[in-house]
View 1 (tube, rainbow, N blue to C red):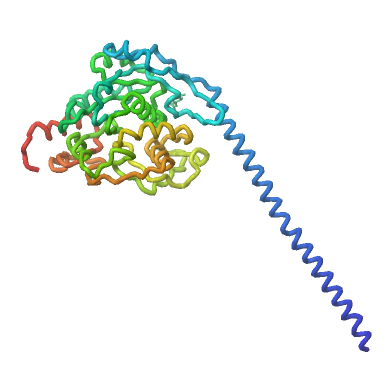
View 2 (cartoon, helix red, strand yellow):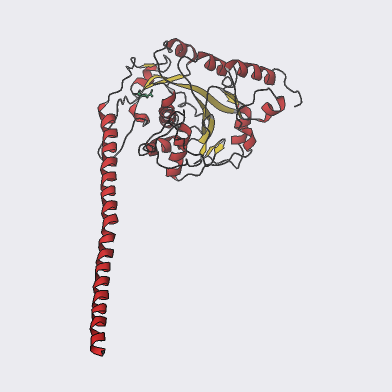
Length: 370
Ligand SMILES: *[C@@H]1O[C@H](CO)[C@@H](O)[C@H](O)[C@H]1NC(C)=O
């Protein structure tokens, strides 16, 4: 009985062992499938990325600049001096080990320039206004308001306009008349604002490297230059590695294709932008343009120009600072408020006419209490 009992129990043990072995084997193979799947997916992903990257650069390298540049011109006052100085780089450079992309400013050259306005004495502040070639009204309004004074609070201030190329009328006459236009040979369009910003940075870095401060300010803005210069003269404001304005924190990248601000995951993979300054008006120390141009060489551009500058700043490891009084950098306000406009630095306006009207109201009745 015992023996008989033992045999089935032995068999039972064997069966259990065998079963466990099979189970182990099963477990081992079970592990292999997801692993294999992962590896396959990874290989697929890498090869897709590579081909996308390849397509990207292929396009950049082989597509020549489609805009036909007019012959190179410079304001007559500076024509002789400048001709020898300006590097005439065109198209996209592609050097082994270095990535240059479409927004890299050195891919373009200036076809109208203001010459050595910074050579004899470096300005304290350069106001750079990106504007479309055909928007003469905005430029004229700025020229007769905040762009008018060359000395503000005892400091040299320069106001210049940055233009790209459009099929519209020639701006050469206007340039001869005012000597404040810079035009580069990229196609001027909303989606090319990042190029425009970086070209502004390149101009500052190469033509005005000793300016103490610079500002990128949109053509539809109100600017209280006196307040800005006063702010920049505060001892707490650094003269290096400084960027300030209206802070944009934790901004989600727009992934809806119909949006004006859409950025694809392929171009910018992260869900949020780093801290940046709203593009309507940002102020920076004179050393930053060169640093931004250099770092931009290795950062894929996307069309949200201000977030792009923020991304460059992050890669540079330079902190963005809040202005001493953040309420001085404002967004839209549709009614004229004497008190507000006498204290503000920037504010978004609706039209050149509004700029003229608000400016008149503020300046033509000095001494009025607010
Ligand atoms: C941006 O400018 C480049 C260079 O001129 C041009 O090739 C490209 O078509 C422009 N893009 C848009 C969207 O206008």
